Length: 329
Image 1: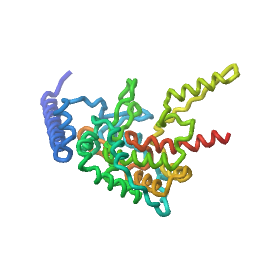
Image 2 (image 1 turned 30 degrees about the horizontal axis):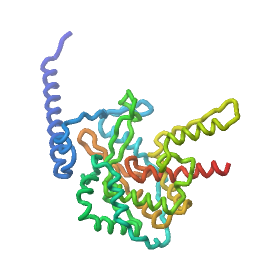
Image 3 (image 1 turned 90 degrees about the vertical axis):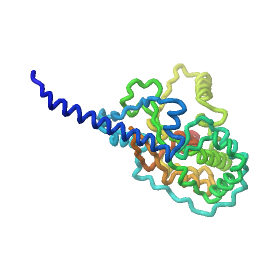
Image 4 (image 1 turned 30 degrees about the vertical axis):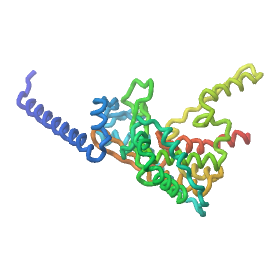
């Protein structure tokens, strides 16, 4: 078998040049990130050392098709975890917002102190630890800001941008499939604190926590209490055989539609102000995904952001019609 050595050497050199160019571009992106986010990748690397990203740049879809470049991989990630909604128009809440009681700084402080100090920050680089250190000089400013947000029914736009992180699901061996991962939204800490305040308003205004069938994300209940209820129900039955049916909803959090969710808030008795700030919270949200040093973004049209404080509560709101059907049957 004959070989064309000159042609081989030419292709080899072109490949090496292309590799060096990409390495140089990746380093410039890595170092240049310091100008925009001093607490970003360069800071983490200097503090903890380099860590290997287990996510490949090429993934396969449910139909078996394989992505061939980073853009296709990013599009697949977005279509899976940030799915579009052709009917995703958010209904407007009409009516006057009643005067809100003066917000206590302790409520905001408790919301900040609940968050772990070592949790990854949002795009602004501010952590819960930083806010704890700066709480006293910033207390009145943050309290007045949150009070205005509640009174006007608006959620600041700068707190709606999420950094989308994809992490492997436990026990998944084939990391080449997009369904082997789950999304986490890294959001600004101040926005998450405001989300906690909104949750308090929802709990006070509605009967959201009164559904005994809801065990997840409810104070005093968990998967353990759900299993105990099943055992109690089985033990109380005189039937010879008991059959159970379990439903696993794929991408449940990612596919919740906003329009019926907001209508259900009204049905549960949430005030106009709370409905409006939740609507503002959902509107114009975006997710940014970084792959191989390149940034990709997508506007959210549905779903409860995983990694947020308010997301689980919105999921509970979306599930309440099922519990009402159970009570009627």
